[in-house]
Amino acid sequence: MERYLALILLVLAIGCTKQAPVANQDSPSKVLLQTYDALNISDSTTFLSLITKVRREDYAEHPEFLKNSMERWRHKHADVQILSETHDSTTAQVQYRIKMTGAITGDTTRFQSVYLEDGKWKVGY
Image (cartoon, rainbow, N blue to C red; front, side):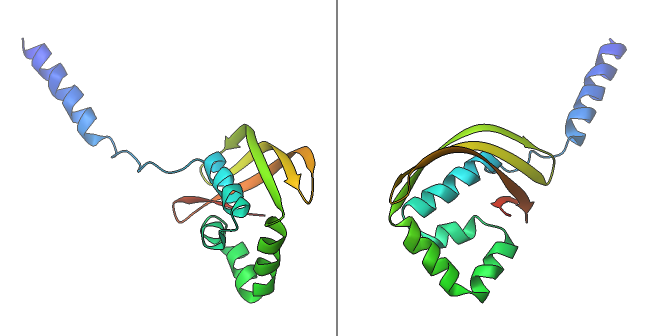
């Protein structure tokens, strides 16, 4: 009986020392899809919230770049299909297929780097 009690206490002790689960965060693939969704509807606020600090700083220094990017995206639409995702604790590579319609058409496969920044995945260079 003492063995069972000791076993139960051991299991409880191990269970209590586990770290709390990490808050549910979006995957690198989901962030990439959200980025294209923002571009498709010309939502610059959401777009800026999904990209890395370095890219946001570039747009802050050159606001005409963001304005021009949003204007170009008004005349096209991207349908994105995630093909694969690999990542370690801070960097991800997302392979995806993008079909463009509108002013520019095309169908190609690309890779995108996504970085963990302040606990959230952000699309980067």
